[in-house]
Image (cartoon, rainbow, N blue to C red):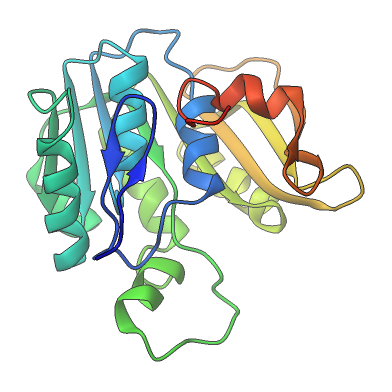
Length: 237
């Protein structure tokens, strides 16, 4: 039996999810802005439900809805929600993104997404792991289509993607009137390349705020910036 991943205020079972909890999800959950006090939140492709749970801990959002297409991940996400302190505010839907867009009339004040990537890498024998990791399952244009239909006029949308996809994704978002608000470039250590871009969008135009985060100075020696960002979640921070 895989042990649950334990955070300060909640635990996450992940033995039935193809994509395990990793730095990407925790970074996005901690960095995403809730300064506009979103009434409701949508988590696209929730996996274990980690992003939704982090936003539930950080915000007063009354409704946090997650969509997950994979059967096992959906069941596990629902279970993780049920076992959390915020189970009355968290809901998981078993649907594809496009199905959800077509059925739902609501708009959301915050949309978050840690999408599948590694599109150009080889595919493994494990079907559900591939579904979670390859963006054929959720192409960027589907994400933008969904955000365009579901984001409230004053809402924010935040996503984490590989740095090399950043320009193309920003261009795609601009075709539906989404403007970049903030970008965080993430490096594993001071000497490594930027691996990830966290990007926040809204329909309002503003000067883009770009910053950088280095995760560790050497193996397991975390930077103060990284500790400050994640300390409300990780047990050992």
